[in-house]
Length: 222
Ligand SMILES: [Ca+2]
Image (tube, rainbow, N blue to C red; front, top):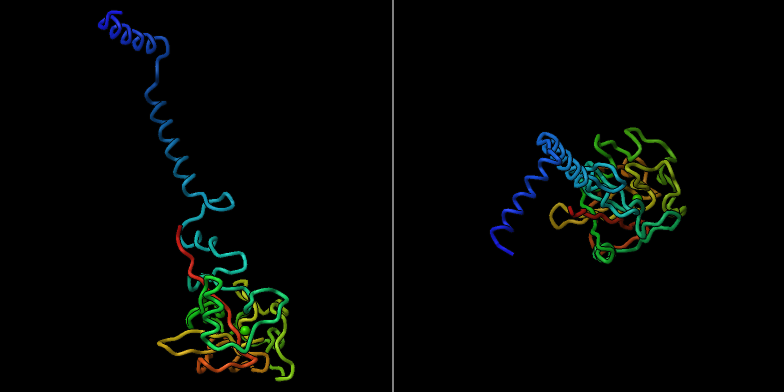
């Protein structure tokens, strides 16, 4: 086969195709634009098949047993450790044990600021359910002998989907500095201290039946 003839034949076929099937350039441009839009939409689609962006996309990265705390931008266990509804919280642990417990789950002890953000929410209320104390809303103000209850026993003691932030057992929190604190009060503490703001400096090596922990997690962007 003659090489030059072959090239000519190819050109001829291209011309023939254009003649037989004329292409509208405007349609091609429109099609390219539509494809670009579809690709962008697909890139933005998150879990559940709907568009999620920025901060909201991080919320979907909290494990199911944790809640997204928008005010602080982190995830927090829904219940006091071991973070199971209906299970009595672990207590009698010092601060180092609390840190080890959370680390074993790939989490950490929350800071004072994070506890307050989870408890008071974006408006900084004094109690997780609102600004005014409501008796028996959380497990507070009881006698020492009454002891803690299984986590989640007070279904209205909740904010952000996180239960028992005030009352039941105190929760270890970290800093500022190297100080350790307990927050939220316990079953035997009244509203003056079993609230979202009061923290008590507590020597890290001391243990008590009324002190447990709740773990936090900073989600990582994909
Ligand atoms: Ca608590």
